[in-house]
Every structure is written in C-alpha cells, then in structure tokens.
Length: 278
Image 1 (spheres, rainbow, N blue to C red):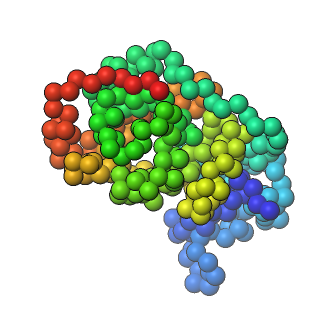
Image 2: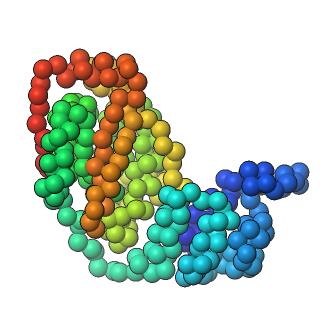
Image 3: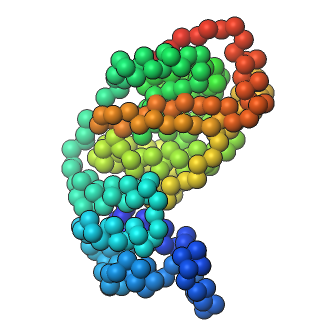
C-alpha cells in the first residue's frame, strides 16, 4: 500500500525528463521519466531504500534523506515544503480515530481590516478546505448568480464537486477541481483534511476520488470565470498566507487583461459595496 510521500516521489520522478537533468536519453526506456536507479544515484541512497519509500514500506525517512531526494528530483521551494509535509503525515500524523474539531471560522480583526482596505476590489479569506470566511463586495459581484455564496457557510471545494453550476461558472473546471483537491493536502491539519476527504468522497464520486491521490501541484494559471452577464473574466491570484494554525489565506484577484478590467468596471457601476464576514 502506498503512502502520500511515496506517491509524490514516484509521481514526480515519472514527470522528469532525464535530459533536463543532464542525463543521456537512452532509447530503451520502457517508460518516460527518471528511472529509480537514476534518482537513487543522484540522491546518494540505495535503490532498495528508495523502493521502500515509494512503496510505503519506510514511513520515517530522516531529514537528510528527504533533502537528498529533494535534491535528486531538483524540487523547487514549494515542492520541498510539500515533500516535508507529506513526510510528516506519512509518519503517523493521521492515525487518530476520533473526528477532529473543525477549523475555526473566525478571521482575525487585522485581516478583516486589510480586507476593508481592498474594497471594492475582488478578494476573499479562505482556508485549504475551501471554506469562504470573508469576502469583499467585488467578490460577491464576481460570483453573483453562480450559487457559490448562496449557502450560510459557503465552501468552494464542495461547490466545485457537488454543484453542477460550477462547471458553467468555471470554464476551466478541471483546473479548479485539481487545485481544490490538491489544497486538501495542505491543512488546516492532516486529521481535519482526512475527515473532509472521507466525507466528500462518497457524494462527489470519481471526479473527486481520482484527484485526491495526486501529489503534484497543479500549474498556476489565470482563473477564468463566466459571469451571468455574459462576460468571461480572467484573473490573476495573489495569495497571502495568514499566520496561525487554521491554514487561512487572503486571496486577491487582479484582472489578467485589460478586457477583464473594463468589463468588471462596467459590472460594478456605482455600487460601493461592503465587506462580508461569514
């Protein structure tokens, strides 16, 4: 049985072209990607030990081994942080059988003050489970008519996988679904995320379950949103991690092109709007 750590190492190895690491592209490769022997050599570990990690038979590699594997895979800073997180939960952080307390939904006052300064821009505070905890009038206008904000406690992950309207609101639905499923690996805690995945899987079906085992971060691309007015809007997302243990993030959406900026200004009109705290 595999582990999150082993699945990530194997998946990342399969995506690497040997020539990108200066290795010869041998014509007799049975599968694309970096061979296990090649990674073991680059990391300075035995093939047998690397096999145990990938197959989930070694769940507690040392920090030195993790760093060596990260070097062997040429991971960037974000991937290295994710590797350390997966090592932590693989080592037994998810073994509790009691349901954990849900993450706190309160947003600290300084973060809400920052949100008010962003009015009437497009911003929200969320956590890695997809709970929408606060949002500006600009975000309310952007998602008006989509159904996302209709519930008392909106959750973007549940909306994406359970509400058919999400496929209309997000023309790049697969990309958004990949992002939401991957974010569950990042908190608020391993136990909370595990319970969330277990609850969502039976009702969300294969579109969710086939994504939750993926360990590679999806690419960072502009978010496209279909507005009920007929405008298709493209947004860059700037994400600020808020301090604390609840994995809250302040996400600011910025027009990705001039057409989006102009179209959204027309939608906004003279409505000054106000901040929403859920």
